[in-house]
Amino acid sequence: MRCLVISDIHGNLEALERVLEAAGAVDRTLVLGDLVGYGADPNAVVERVQRLPHLITIRGNHDKVAVGLSPAEGFNQLARQAIEWTAAQLTPASRAWLTALPCGPLCVDLGGSDLVEICHGAPFDEDFYVFDELDAQRAMAAQRRPLCLFGHTHVPTVFAMNGHLMALGPARTDRFTIGLESGTRYLVNCGAVGQPRDADPRAAYGILDVEARTIEIRRITYAVAAAQAKILAAGLPKVLAQRLAVGR
Ligand code: ZN
Image (cartoon, rainbow, N blue to C red; front, side, top):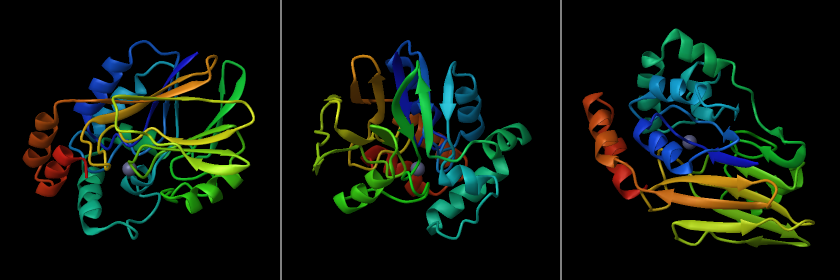
């Protein structure tokens, strides 16, 4: 079973379309939240994700704030401006669908396999950021499956735990593959589709092969200029367009 893993699309339709095209045929698509916020195409992204066959998805913090499920208090000025714009753009149908998204963590059944759990931030708190080894240790203490996939930081990250914790990369390559050894637990962030923040502007996504027990983190260029033009035309803060070009 081949699964596409995507997170943090953030209203960037150009990046999403490119990733879906590059991923090819998959048996499941796992979406780890933050479909909206920052980018200029919140409704189009929601509609595109809704149409994906065999979709499994959870909500992210921007999805929650956009539909009024939680306040924008923790957001910086830029994120707040963008989410207010997004909230005003959402159609009743998009809003209703986002409101109904389940909260992570979620154990997912992939063809009878009990390999995978998904969350937006961390298994113990959907809004928690896992950046360093201390964060990873807390997250892995709460994870219930051998492989926990997360998003939220927009930084591709791989931790493995087998007696001790190891940070495994990823290296800055087009494709970074991790073989999932039995007896080892993994905490993996495949990066952000629509707003990478690891100084690499390419869209990031993951391909999980359940039977082969591999997960591959991939990068792909997309039409950044088109996404930027839409952000500027929408009257969103200029820096939201600029950051797409530098991956920050
Ligand atoms: Zn995000």
